[in-house]
Image 1 (cartoon, rainbow, N blue to C red):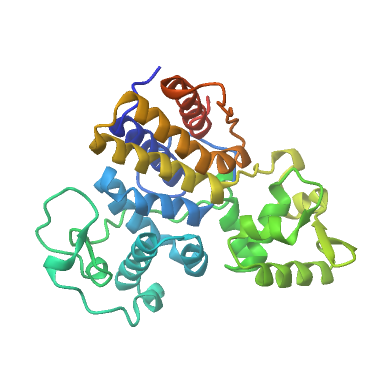
Image 2 (image 1 turned 60 degrees about the vertical axis):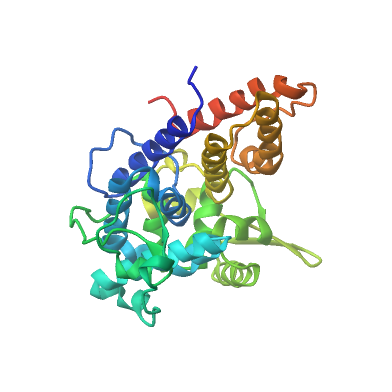
Length: 333
């Protein structure tokens, strides 16, 4: 049983990020061959939030974004950034990639002038010799970083990279995300709202994309009054993709799950600096679970209600959830 601490949680999160990115072309040796379809923008957002935990990982993430940015949706990445700090990190990373890759130069167009050094917010507890201008433009302090040039193009035939394969077919936008969700979900039919949540685009955009796919005859549509539900013929699509139907990657609600993982990381950061008593620590853990429990459950992780565990007795319940979360992120081979 792990000793739950800020450092232990940060190591688990960075290990997960390394494992996913190396499967997607980042420099390094991938020890895993996951059969889920990762969400690239949700993964990027987690990595940008966790910049201070592993500076080398952060630098290689930026290099991967520069190398593979043509298959990344800047709009979707911004849509998933739900707070001001995350949006600034997203804009800075996109600007950095645009400054170092001519094909992505639109991402760096019109960025603000760098803020004065004394006004910059550091992304890590490190000493910085020279601020990176892309990050300084958004009020963030990071060491000036040049591309490592080590990242490779993503192998889109890997299950984990399924999103990129569909983007090559449909373009980077709502249609590719809608098809990815319909092909990987175990729901027989899905509403616009369900697809939009996973797609990371607005309901109107997703409704238009689904309507176009249905009109083209490649997605099924069942209408009852004002409600529309959409389905897909997995057998036909698996033939097109040359993948057996039972070999298609599985869906995970990364849009909900990875922000919950970040909240756990941030909670342990706060806890390490708080000096809470065991009673208060357990009480704060209960509040965290009330906040993120629905997202964990939607991601396939069982969350006990813990109503009978009062005071410090809730802490073992919290530990049980943590074990389930990190076991899910690092399943047995």
